[in-house]
Length: 290
Image (cartoon, rainbow, N blue to C red; front, side, top):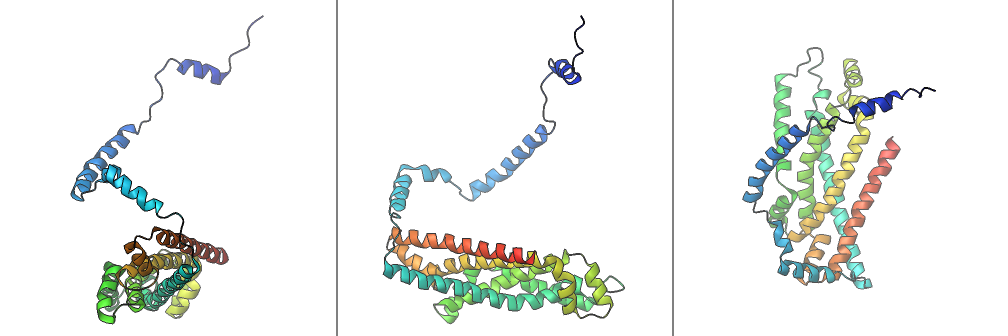
């Protein structure tokens, strides 16, 4: 009685059993890329004096241990929590007011520099020289605003308006106006231009073309980026508190100077909760727009 024929897959497997194992054909490229990246990165690490092994030094480990142990338990007295609640509210208010002022500046600038909303390009496809010059001038203004970090703006403004939240609000407004204007224009430019062009060709205003042509495709991304920047503004408000701009950062600076680890731990927990709340707001708004 003859044996049943072998399965084709089994035969192929048997035929290849004696061959060399399969090798990734791209391994040489990956190794070369890794070596080149290491060769470029290593001098940068040396020049920046990056020395992470200092963290493993016995003295550093002891200092880290003592500092972390002071976090337990977090401060939770009613008096301290009331002070922290007031500072937290001030921080959120600083971030929100700064973002509102930034939007007041960024939205008009976005309308001007966005080439998608240009009327002079209709028909020829090219923007007029005057329009191009104006857009370039405003783009340089946005570059100037966002090139200076909000902390530096706060340091300058503290010397002009004095200590307090006013310097922080203005610092956020200046820096974030430059950031929002640039990104808003890029988001609008990446949308499908057909609806916007049709509205402009038929005599629509630029504002109507924005609302009914560009925004339906980009509203979700614009809202998501705005809420993300609001979250960044909250973090920035905390940092600016260390230079006298008020809020939670100033309270944390005082606790750090007094080596009150429990108070610092409580404020770090509040930082996490604030960021989580901002993330929840972003998800909710995106879901509603979708």
